[in-house]
Amino acid sequence: MENTTLRRRVLATATATVAVGALALAGLNGVASAGPAGTTAPVVSADSLSPGLLAAMERDLGLDAEAAKTRIAGEYRAAAVAAGLEKSLGASFAGARVSGDKADLTVSTTDATEAALITKAGARAEVVGHSLDRLESVKAALDKAALSKARKNVPVWYVDVETNRVVVNAASTSAAEAFVKAAGVGDRLVTVARSTEQPRALADIRGGDAYYMNPSGRCSVGFAVTRGTQHGFVTAGHCGRVGTTTNGVNQQAQGSFQGSTFPGRDYAWVATNTNWVARPLVNGYGRGDVTVTGSTPSVVGASVCRSGSTTGWHCGTIQQLNTSVTYPEGTISGVTRTSVCAEPGDSGGSYISGSQAQGVTSGGSGNCSSGGTTYFQPLLPALQAYGLTLATSGGGDPTTPPTTPPPTDQPGGTWAAGTTYAVGATVTYGGATYRCLQGHTAQAGWTPAAVPALWQRV
Picture (cartoon, rainbow, N blue to C red):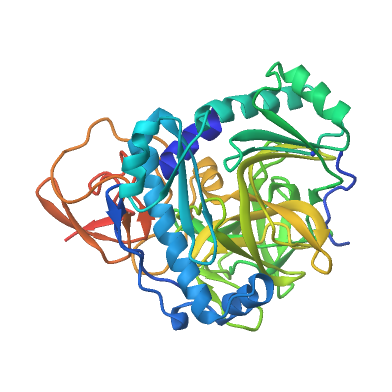
């Protein structure tokens, strides 16, 4: 249950067989505090958002600047409320999603007595039959079956929190039924959907910029990172293997892959030479760069935009979390399914919601002329896998969320897990005062004294 564990760390306090290979080619600064008992939406001005992001949201989502401002503010608030409620509801939590331009939040539970708590927090309560943990255990069984090659002609499967089911997309009903049978999960919690989708890996220090894998190929930078004093960036694992050298967007020597995981997951990191400096920016492609201020994950239904070196800026919405998708090279698990389009060379590029880094482009189907479905590898697993820290604005060092909480916490003070803190926010904890260095949703174990990259004692 690796995905469930990671989701708890992040939120509980915050495939027709694919007929393509890797397609390589030869600013919101603050989030209001929030908790399960009530939330105040952040005040967001249109001027604080990247012009490029606003233009892409207008083109792809039909939102003018004011509507984009309202939606992103609502989505930030919803993410914070959902994080607090997941912690409060525990085993009865059955997922969260937003809808509409005001990002109205719906939170599902298997316990009808919890509806009042959800309503009090400002969300719509929905009572369903299956918890998110139960659905994710079914999906985990499907993931295991995929490793045995039982997923022939089944490109995508995921947990759908809206229908409270696990959905299996397949070229034929018989292929899906054979896959479900091989997983031994039965069909009580599974919905089979016919699909012609043919996802593929989109292969081709500022997020969204092109880089070139030697001797050939092009992909896109995800997000600038550091590891100690070493600068570099995260990108898609299918773009290169350990030792693959890279040239930057200016065709000058850049660095080499230090870690790469694909298939299974789709992340990698490239260490750059001293000519390259990690910046908390994503390329807006002529409309202004977007400043990265944090990495709080968004919920289902939230808007998300992508920057890539082939198609630039495009936006859409998050459709499902924790999706599994099969490429010709193998199955990738734990990716996020979106309505954003992408094309060859966009692989590895940045996915961002407002100013919050979400992940790197993995693959998909369709294109940016007719539309498509694209998957991104969430950022936090990559940071954790390689001990990387995300470059963000706001002063102080960027941070990698701790993989395990400290053994003990000192109680007392205003700090609370499940609360979303903006850069510069102050809290008290254990008799001391701390200032927030990076916007984030607090999790159990991320106490100010234990995570100096997030908090500075004042």
